[in-house]
Length: 403
Ligand SMILES: Cc1ncc(COP(=O)(O)O)c(C=O)c1O
Image 1 (cartoon, rainbow, N blue to C red):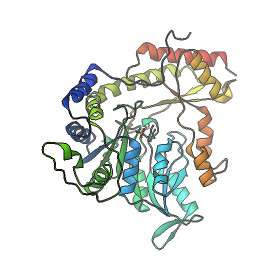
Image 2: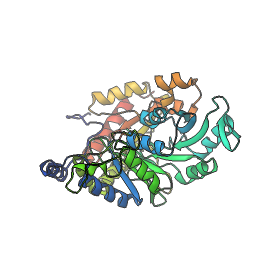
Image 3: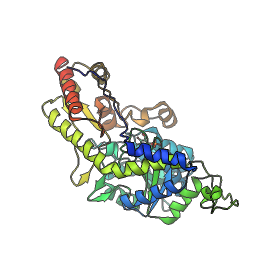
Image 4: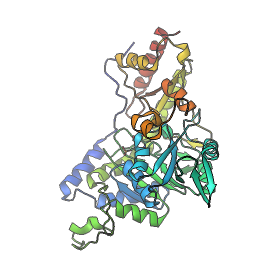
């Protein structure tokens, strides 16, 4: 079997409505942050069920500004998952703080309160009301959970853990739009959250992100620092009702979203539920198809949660195959199926390995699961025939290379 045309790993779902919305902005005379961005923020906040949403030019920017707004800085340590993209940890490093990677739960590949508790009691001591690392002496300040592939973490348990240890929580929700836990959307919990509108995500603005919180002080700090650290509504200074006068109150960043991107985002947001239904159908099709292929382990939704299905990472039972993951990916590619791998555990990447000196075996779950992971295509533009062809090709490769 195989395909006549290549099925890419990801493909944005852009309809005529997005194209028209972007063209209207191009014709409007106002391209950068403006009325479209403001409307996008309001609509996004309403959809999530959160008080404040600040549109930014990436999720990375939202993560960075959130940690900055919480005052994370040199001498601080932030816990996060090793099964993530570098953006999650690089923002900790931007601020001069230290990243403390944590191993993940075997089933979800997410952080769990149990593992966090084990790590803290092993590596930190309580001194003068603060948790201090036994070796570095750094102060435990924050937690950045990641919802791997769009399967939400147990945020209730993680927030309890954070409260108990007086940690700030910045939720990396790059994969989790729209995901919910017991009916409450990720983004609407008592923490700061950062969403991504990168081109491969569940909705896109090309590049873009959204910071969400119920804390007004946090939201206004993020808004101000995301636009050079200049006084409120600085983006209006060239508008009819704007003023030429502004005040620089901090050395901020240039992280604002354009109206071109926001117009695209507004249409994508309106289509998000229907795009989710399509991704759910793809996941459902894979679940059924792979039941007949025991060499493949499929991702499972946990009870009480609704995943965003950003990714569909299968795990190969390598002991039942003659080939490794690299060869498996090459065989799929040869037969017309694009794939990816999420993630090369971040603690093993050269920068972090050198900075923190981890040893093999420090993250047993991530190290055992990583060599088995392959992310299959899952996006709203996929047809039933596409899904069937992926199942067929995976079945064929397994058949050829069964141990
Ligand atoms: C888990 C995770 N966090 C953060 C990001 C960063 O998102 P952005 O590209 O919007 O900055 C990504 C991007 O792929 C991601 O996968």
